[in-house]
Length: 280
Ligand code: GLY
Image 1 (cartoon, rainbow, N blue to C red):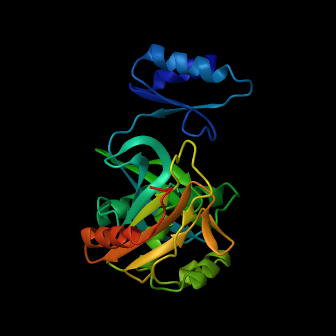
Image 2: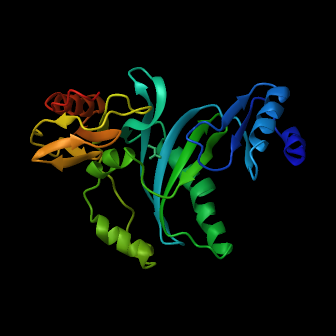
Image 3: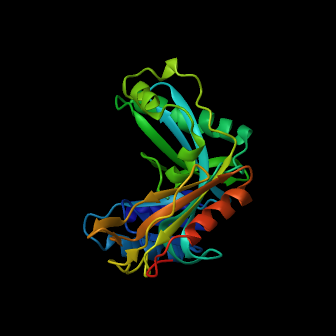
């Protein structure tokens, strides 16, 4: 606690104080004053063994950049933005993601190059230099600040539901790409091209999600999917020939199109054909 209070001096206000590790979004305080920051530190360190992260408060638009690496070569694999809150118009509690779209054009080609050169590639170089080379997917959560892209966090996986918006834009051989990454041969692969079409994903969740999702709701016979409107099944199972919801995010529909509006319309049209009284 004493060290953390000293470290606070290195930050301007507001400052972010959070529990190190997963805290279901509950361990974060955006402190406007030094007293608030100190109170947050006090509260976090009241838990035995607690570790705490103090971070600069970044202002800007958040965007996700995906990359695949074999530990040396790094290939960008598209951009997306997800929508966290349960309600229409960015309202209500945070979720794992109620929808996503790709590409996120707010990350212009210039900004993407900067993010790759200043953030993602140096990360891969540093991990190799530390003797812990990283092989796999890097999902960089970026904030587009007035000073350019800044890293908020990495996930070492594709996102949910970002994946459902990314993959319908990839016409290549995903297995070949993963194999090249796994066997240190990414340098042999030409840059990955995602199709210029837009993709937009909407999640259908069980009523009560994210706080207390209702399980057991029956989903009606699914409509026929197509490349323009793909259905991804998630929190559901088959029980006595019926599709039954088992979890929070039950399924997702991705629409594709020449514009983001067209992709959105196709996603919602297909969603409208799905009968699921216990979801939203
Ligand atoms: N949609 C956010 C994530 O997968 O982390």
